[in-house]
Amino acid sequence: MSLPRRPPWKLLAALYPFAAGAMGVNLFFAALIGSWLGLPVLTPWQAAAGGLVIGLPATYAFACHITRLMQKAEGE
Image (cartoon, rainbow, N blue to C red):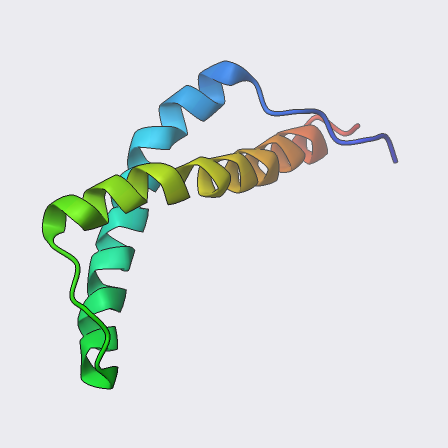
């Protein structure tokens, strides 16, 4: 089995808006659940900003997964 390739920039650029949005929503709802434990609630703007940051590693991880699937489909 060959080494996995790095994901192409076009794939990363295409996936980032979706990952950042999903991470922002997840962060917002996690903050709402955290309020039950006495933690502060994030504003939607704070959650969106956090989603932009957390979306980077999420995008890279999912792009690596997609790249492995493409490699497997090509029979490498």
